[in-house]
Structures are given as structure tokens and as C-alpha cells.
Image 1 (cartoon, helix red, strand yellow):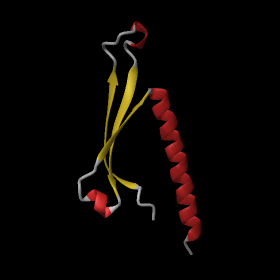
Image 2 (cartoon, one colour):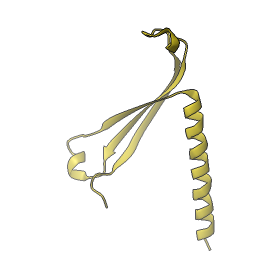
Image 3 (tube, rainbow, N blue to C red):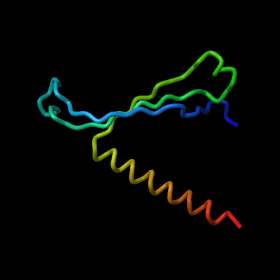
Image 4 (cartoon, rainbow, N blue to C red):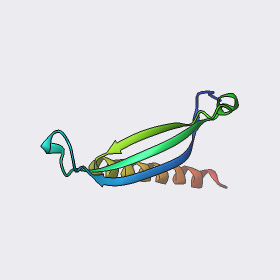
Length: 86
């Protein structure tokens, strides 16, 4: 197993609208923000509490595209799982 892999331990998200920006074109734009907290799978690294936060921002269109792709991936995994069972 790759010693550089991490496990997802927490996900938080929020939806917002920009209210103050330096460029008026960005004012009133909706966004979806995710914070993913990961932890190394390597026990030696994990002992020093090496959790990492990864921040992701999406426009609503980007979020819905990601959601659609995740739904497709989930259906594909379900089909593979269903065909592997006797």
C-alpha cells in the first residue's frame, strides 16, 4: 500500500453569496465551499496528528457537474458490485 495515501475523516460545507469584493463583477455570485479533513494512513505520520484541511470552492454549475459525475461513478460501482456477487 502507498504510504502517502490519506483517509477522509471529515467534510463540512456551506453555501454563500459574495457581498464584498474588489471587482463589482464578482458581487452577488453564489458559491459552494467544502472543507475536507484528511489524515495520513501511515501510522508513524498519524501519531504526530498530521491532519490536513483541503478547501474547495465551486460555482453552483461546477458543483452540480461534480455531483452528476459522482452519481455516475456511484452507479458504475453498484453495477460492478452487483455483477461480482454470485
